[in-house]
Image 1 (cartoon, rainbow, N blue to C red):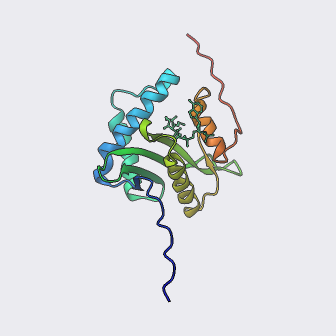
Image 2: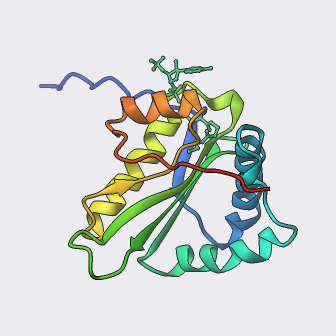
Image 3: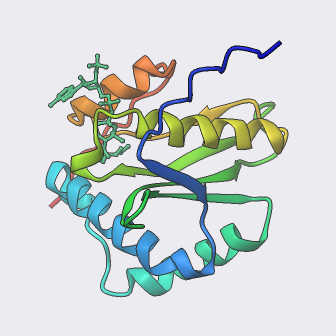
Length: 170
Ligand SMILES: CC(C)(COP(=O)(O)OP(=O)(O)OC[C@H]1O[C@@H](n2cnc3c(N)ncnc32)[C@H](O)[C@@H]1OP(=O)(O)O)[C@@H](O)C(=O)NCCC(=O)NCCS
């Protein structure tokens, strides 16, 4: 007897994987776009002149080690980069009972790919990685007026636990 064919799962249109050496330029381009976006909300997110060189060691760590995760999504077919995430194990001083967690340091989805579950897929992969390296807590910073990101993170189960207050002393 023939078994009924299961419905083919819908292709989201992107392919998501851990970044490899040849993805470095694409990750940097997305990183730049993320920070241009963030700097539009808060100028203190502006990158330095040598930001690429500063980012290199983190990318090297992501390629090799267990401490940093870099994910990249590319459009199926064209290979065009459409999103990325960077997460790393954060270690605070040992005097704190809870001094380790995974921090999502960057998450960006290209404008034309927003609202299509790619952000959720990137975040889910980062959270799965956190669990796989023995870190059940994931934290991140969001600019207070980044309403779309805040709404997205809340929908993904993140709750605000602290606030950063700033006073600029000219
Ligand atoms: C944050 C980001 C990764 C989320 O990805 P996304 O694909 O936009 O997320 P989704 O569309 O799945 O979810 C966003 C939610 O905000 C809603 N939303 C859409 N536009 C919005 C807007 N202008 N303002 C507020 N909420 C908005 C969406 O409707 C959705 O909520 P819903 O599911 O109830 O409809 C993406 O928007 C992005 O890359 N933004 C620029 C970079 C950034 O802010 N990164 C995070 C820095 S911490």
